[in-house]
Length: 175
Image 1 (tube, helix red, strand yellow):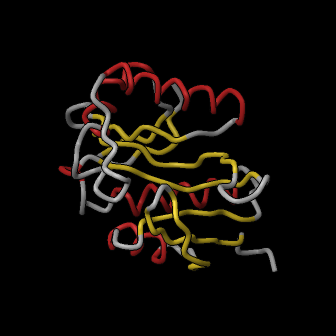
Image 2 (tube, rainbow, N blue to C red):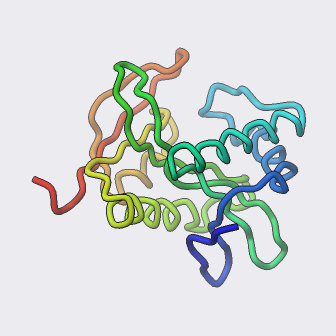
Image 3 (tube, helix red, strand yellow):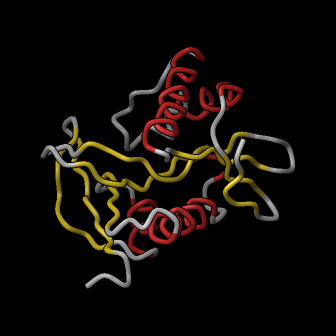
């Protein structure tokens, strides 16, 4: 298992099937899904299937969301990172930056710090020219983080009847 970032408090690493319990705790939580359409999961098998899709992305795209593990107790905090995504409104592909954390780990700077790391990884390691992100219009925390790390609002769009903000960031050395 590859570790991408280690801080005093947590690791950012490849996701494994052993993260199924933590992924279930994350995606079965109604607070976590408040701005995601309230579509929580109800089985560990669904969590395992989501993890397998991430592992497939590592193999097919060389990148995928990363697990965040709290070092003090080994907790699965959530995930953060990049995903090579198919556009919602065209045939294009793009790199999407995202994160999702369990509520007990909110407001600790983890989402911001891992988003900054993911941004820098995209530009410096993957040589990505542009990066995209989305957040529900009412998700003040996520919108704040995306703007704070340098994303620029582009437009509103609807995803499954949810009004969202679409953000873009060009690599700093690109005009």
